[in-house]
Image (cartoon, rainbow, N blue to C red; front, side, top):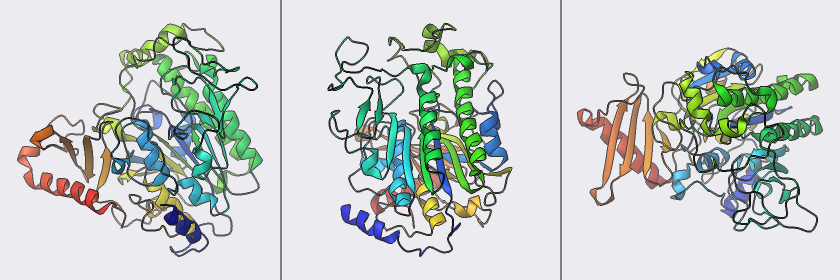
Length: 478
């Protein structure tokens, strides 16, 4: 892997993949990845109880995808796929705590190799080495980022602290962070995270990074915590939506996106900045139960937030909001609600405004797309499952870019979903009984209510064979 990384770094010095877009002035790039935001949570994707004017602006001024998917239906493997261009199911891991392999090329190393200043600000959830001790390595700085400020795993994690570069932020002098059973906040921490100010803090760091690097190309991987549990919008957003605390939290997320857009306009950078907005997986239709006993650390406890955060998803549903839109189920599921997500891209003068695409896209495709923008050839053993979507973005695609899209469907390395056109196959293992298959025709049955596997044996065979081929060959990118 280290040799592959060295060869990849060397390849960054030459452009052999066709014409370079913005050869003299490469675009700044922002990837905004929301946490547990569902397909139906944005007004530009049909939400009526939530208003998201800033994300809607991105869609109005760029391209909105209607068939975009995450690499997995849960946070950590999904982020692995986005960062590496490689399907996380190739690691054959269980659980929701993935780590980057040493030397694995990433979006950050790709862009830093072409002179970009790089920052990961927000939720990381790809590990900080084997132990939670200072220094926290390997982490984002070992993956190609110049600066990191964020939340280690989740907004509701037990650490209750931010991480800056390679250490916990806000420790007492000479202290380390120590988790103590039965204690709400870790020992050694002078400044615990304030739950209703987390995304405000992260956005401030993102804005600082943009200001500091306005005179050079930069890449910002901005990963706010909203609307992941805990559902804790800042006080000024409470009561602003028509579906309770959850809708308020999505509207706070939108406002922070608006702050970034406003700064780009102010600095004159909007015209040469590519912005991608998406989510790491579908939303959770139900409220989390495991962390509801947490004593929230709040700047403002108003609006009965200490109690209402426990039922925010249920309350939103009772008020008529459907978080994953028309799709079945949600986070952690191989059904569409678990992995079909909003995806909007704005790039003035390159992406036509007000356009929509029904091309099937996976977040792993960002790697090959950014490489194409820079004119970089990707080595054979990097970004193995990434497809170049630049022709789609620029309106030059003659047809489908992907024949098959594979998604890790659960946290047990047990469920795989494969999409091909409107066909959707879910393959699961049934112990000694072998593999089980469900097949859905999304054109006739977008809610995946009727399994038609028995009536379509040839389609099942074709899609199951595609899964086997993808596993055996170790790649899907040509």
